Image 1: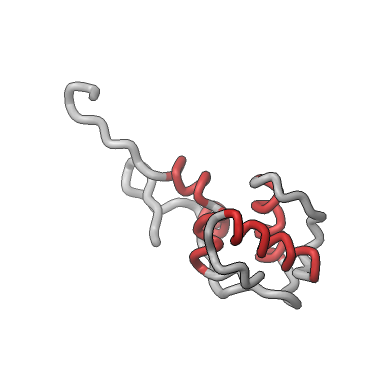
Image 2: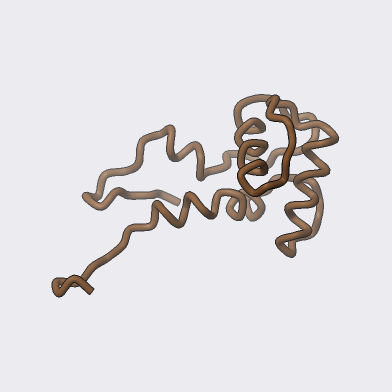
Length: 103
């Protein structure tokens, strides 16, 4: 999904990386995408260390998040789970349309 600024310009890549998931993440994944998931889990008050290693604890915390939000608790961060994780940022990036009368 592409996000546009109010003037029609596409958001910078560093912001897009926060709201888009290239591939599902699961136990054994390493790197920045895993760090991002761990950060988002913390922002949702599901505390865990942020180390970029999708290990047993991250898998458990993803399952907790999924279960809380009514998803099948697989421990895999798929597109649906990631979309829910980043929903707060997606909401603030949604353009607000104001009619000519300011309503």
